[in-house]
Image (cartoon, rainbow over all chains, first blue to last red):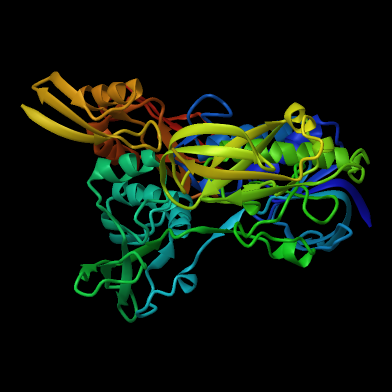
Amino acid sequence: MKQVDIVIVGGGPAGLAAAVAAYDSGAENILILERDEQLGGILNQCIHNGFGLHTFKEELTGPEYADRFIQQVNEREIPYLLNTMVMDISPDRIVTAMNREDGMFQLEAKAVVLAMGCREKPRGALNIPGYRPAGIFSAGTAQRLVNIEGYMPGKEVVVLGSGDIGLIMARRMTLEGAKVKLVAELMPYSGGLKRNIVQCLDDFGIPLRLSHTVIDIEGKEHITAVTIAEVGADRKPIPGTEERYTCDTLLLSCGLIPENELSTAAGVELSPVTNGPVVNESLETNIPGVFACGNVLHVHDLVDYVSEEAAKAGQTAAKYARGEVTESAGKEIRMKAESGVRYTVPSTIHPDRVDDKLTVRFRVGDVYKDSYVSVYFDDERVQHKKKRIIAPGEMEQIVLTKKQLEEYPDLQTITVKIEAM
Amino acid sequence: MEIRELTCINCPMGCLLTVETDGDEIKDISGYTCPRGRTYAEKEVTNPTRIVTSTVKVVGGKNERVACKTEHDIPKDKIFAVMEAINAAEVQAPVVIGEVLISNVAGTGVDVVATAHAI
C-alpha cells in the first residue's frame, strides 16, 4: 500500500490552506484528493467580491482567492489528484479512493485532514408543502448553473432563506435580467451579512420579508407560483397573512450542513450542534491523527477564517505525521458554551499543546445588543468584552493565551457566555 | 429637500442612517453611531460606487463562461450598462486570470478583467 504522510480530503479553500501550512511546517509527502475537475472548491462559483480582506488585505472574488492558494500549492509542488472521490477513511487512517485512471486504490496515511466542506439543505429537509415540480433549486445549484454553466434557471424568482448565498443569487439573477420578487426569511433576522443585504437586495429594491415562509408550491410539471405567509413566534404560519406570488423559480438558501459521511464512517464523533467533528485545540478529532478544518468542521461566513483555521490543522497534522504529537501528558480542559453561545470550536483544550495563542470560535443563537462576551475559568471571570451587537449570522471569536492557561494549573472548565449589561 | 434612508454596512449593527440633501449638498446626517457610519452615508449619497462581478461567454474552449469583474468600482447607476456590455462580449479560450476582457466598459474608464482561468 502506498504510504503518504498527510492525506488531505478536499481541495477547496480549507484543503489548500491546510496543504500549504503542512508543507511550510516541514511535511513533505502530502497528497490532496479532490473530487471535482479543478482545485478551489466552492470558491470557483463564488464570482462575487468581498473575499480576502483579512488574509490578503484586498478585496478579491472567489476564484481569485482560490487562485492565490492554488499558486501556493503549485509553487511548493504539492501533489494532488483531481476527479478523485474518497470512498472511505478507516480509524487507522487507511484512505480508500477512486478515479478513472487508477480505479480503486488505498493509501496509508500518517495523518488525515478532513476538508470536505458542506452541503446545502435541500427541499426535502425543509418540509415545504405543495407540489414537487421542476424549477426549485438550492441557491448554490443555481449559482453553479449561472456562473459556471452559463445557464439561467428562470426569469421570475422567489428566494426562500436569507443566507448569504441566497442574497448573492438574488443580485446575480437580477443582474442577468431576472425579476426577483422577494426574499422570504423564516427567522425574525437575516442569516446573511449586513453588506449583502444592502448591496444585493436594497441596491435593487428587492424586498426582504422577515418572519415569512413559503407555505405552498404550485405547478405540476414546472413551478408556477408560491404562497408566502407570515409566521408567529412559534414559526408557524399565521392564517390570513397568505400572499401568492407567481414565479418560475424558487431558490432555497436555508442553511448549510457539514458533509461528514466519511468522518462518521471513520468513527469521528460529531457535535449535534455544528454537525461537524468534536475537536481539541489541535483541531484533532477523537480519532488520533485525523484533523478537521473549514466548513466540514463548522460552517463559516468568511473564507479568510477558513484559511486561518485550516492552516492550524495543517500545522498540527504535519507535527503528528512526524511523531511529534504524543499523547498529551497533561490534563484536558473542557470548553462549555452557555447563555446564548451555541457551541465553541475547539471543544477541549490540552494546555500543554497550545502554542502562544489559541483562537476559540463560536456562534450565538440570537441577536444580542449591548452585551458582553464573557470567558470564565471555572468560576472566575477572566474576559469580559463589550460588544455592541452579536448576531447568529456572524461568527465570533475569543483568544486564549498559553500564559493565561498556565496561570491556572487546576483549571477544569472554560465557559464562554453572553452576559447582559 | 430630499430625505434618504440607508443601512450602514460597516458592521453587523446595521445602523439606520437618515441623510437630508438639498441638490448636491448634504444638509444633515443622523442615525450613525460611529464615524464610519457618517463617512459611509456621505459616500453613498454623493458618489455611490460598486464593483460589478459577472461572467463572460467563452468560445472555442472547454469552459462555457469565465468569471470577471470591473477592475475598480464604477458608479452605481452604471451597473446595468456595464452588465449589458458584459453580456454582449465573447472571449476566445484560453483566458488567463487578470486578462482584460473589455476595456473602458460602458464609458466608465474602467476595464473588465478575468478573475479566473478558462480553457
